[in-house]
Every structure is written in structure tokens, then in C-alpha cells.
Image 1 (tube, rainbow, N blue to C red):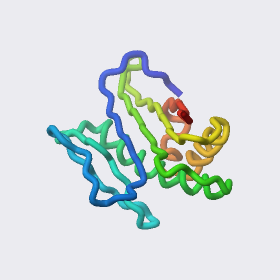
Image 2 (cartoon, rainbow, N blue to C red):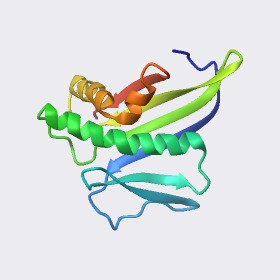
Image 3 (spheres, one colour):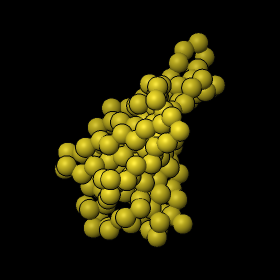
Length: 148
């Protein structure tokens, strides 16, 4: 698996479980995209630029899918997630030698849970999420857990 030598472009996403479908957060030239999960729950891709780059769209689609997988992984471990848990994904495209590759940085916020519990759920979620499975072993994916 290649590591990016120099980042050329990055796209960020922030996904949360939307408990208030009337709540809008986008402003100043950005918009909120409401995505539906397989179980019918709404996922938000918050503050998307009006003309997003491919990296941002991939990060948004991945985060919407991954946050659903994270919820499934938590329920399999019988862990109740805080109502304000979220997933941020930064997808970068960059150079590796004479070629190009992608990389991803995950930040999972789950206030009140132990970091090792969140890490275990996050790793299980990567085994469930189709986007994570599609890129497994092909791009570098790092994880940052925030529990405060």
C-alpha cells in the first residue's frame, strides 16, 4: 500500500445521525445534503461546497455509509452510542513517485465512551462498510478517536 508523498487536493466530510430533519446548517455558499441509509435513517453531509471536488464527494459518500456501519458495529457489541457521535473523513489525493494515490484520515467523535471501545467499534465498522471494504489494502487509512 502506497503512502502519499505530497498531497495535491483534499476533501472533508462530517456525518452525523440527523435527529432533527428540519435543522439546516449550511450557509455562506455551502449546502447540507441529506442522505438516506438502508435502515431509512437520515445522514447529513454537512456544509458541502457548491462545487465539490471528487475527493469531497467520495469522503461524503464514505462517511454516510460508514456512520451507518459504525452504528451496526456498536449494536453488535451492545454499546449505546451518544446521540452526538459523528464521523469526519478527510480524503486526499496526492503523488507517490511518478503516480497518484488516495489516503484517508478518519476522526470519530463519541463523547463519554472509552477510546478502546470506540477503536474496536471503528475497526469492526470497516469490516461492515462497503466503501471501507472496497479500499482495504489499497489506500492508507488512519484513525483518530475523540471521546471528550
